Image (cartoon, rainbow, N blue to C red; front, top):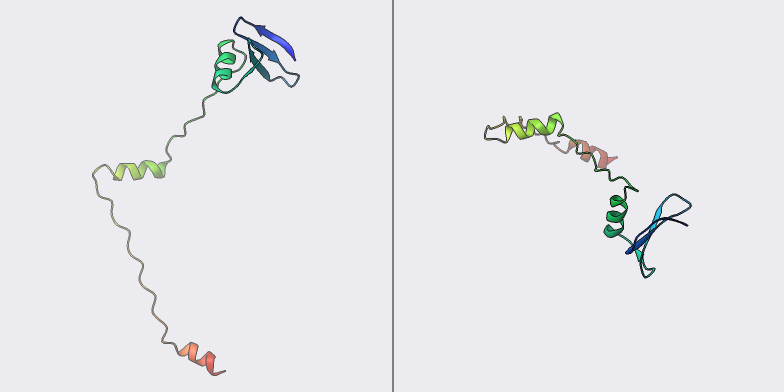
Length: 94
């Protein structure tokens, strides 16, 4: 690891794989949010926010019907006729 930047509070090292290590003035590693904040401050990494997807047409149509206007209910499917059981009894007789 080679020293990339050194301050009174911490030292930033660049590893051979291109990533960074940060150690405080006592030599203890700094990790997590504090490490990210330090690297962002020195512009050694870029923060990329995740994309926010816009609602699809289907979601937009659901929202437009939920604003007080009642949507038409979908027609109910007709119940299937029940078998009289003749087929089952014919199979049992075989």
